[in-house]
Length: 291
Ligand SMILES: Nc1nc2c(ncn2[C@@H]2O[C@H](COP(=O)(O)OP(=O)(O)OP(=O)(O)O)[C@@H](O)[C@H]2O)c(=O)[nH]1
Image (cartoon, rainbow, N blue to C red; front, top):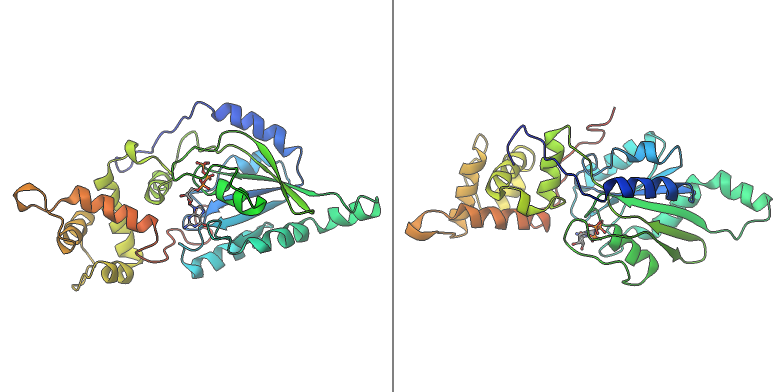
């Protein structure tokens, strides 16, 4: 990836998915968007506001186990201020998911009351689940439906077809295939999606990506970075490549001739960041990118 140049991403199934979404949204009472709590702005689908056509919205801040809890709380407050329901979840362990149904009932309280009045009290709440690839939709569905029918893979784009899943007696969710932006107007969005692994690594130069990530972490989470990689000296003012070399040296990553193997160091750094080993890190402040 080159700095200042947005990643272009045109999956062939996207127009089809969009049409499917438009059709599916008519069938549901609310739309839940699975986003990555580490990048709540960049992991949103910018088309969903339009596609959801005014349906009540729920933001599921997933991977909250990897995100900075202070930022997560601020993002939840931000979404609530904008009229959406929002909760932090960890769809891998299931943490936080018991708040999903109560939240859905809260935001649909008027509708549920109207159903009761019409003698339709037993009707299940229908929720469409949307989200960009790799946000965690399959993990969510598996957790909610208590089985492993949705395929979970650490590979963007594995969810392919739409399906209804009952969630107890009161709710059912509709899973839709993932869609990503047709283009990123803001190159920082593409970069952050790449940091978290939402964009396939084989289209990105990993050393460049790791250097950028190090710059971002040194600016916001210098303490965690220094602790993880035993960097004793003051790291402020160091460039990404210098940091990558330093980390490679600390980990004893040498290439032929004794030079630091920065490629290996880059892969290791990205893996550790994505697995939360550096710490709980959020890359976007509440409200960032939103009007
Ligand atoms: N740490 C952590 N990892 C998660 C969480 N939710 C999902 N993951 C991981 O994120 C990766 C992607 O999860 P999926 O559930 O396959 O994501 P998806 O949105 O269905 O992805 P597509 O099938 O590509 O649309 C997997 O490696 C999951 O194990 C979470 O809350 N915490």
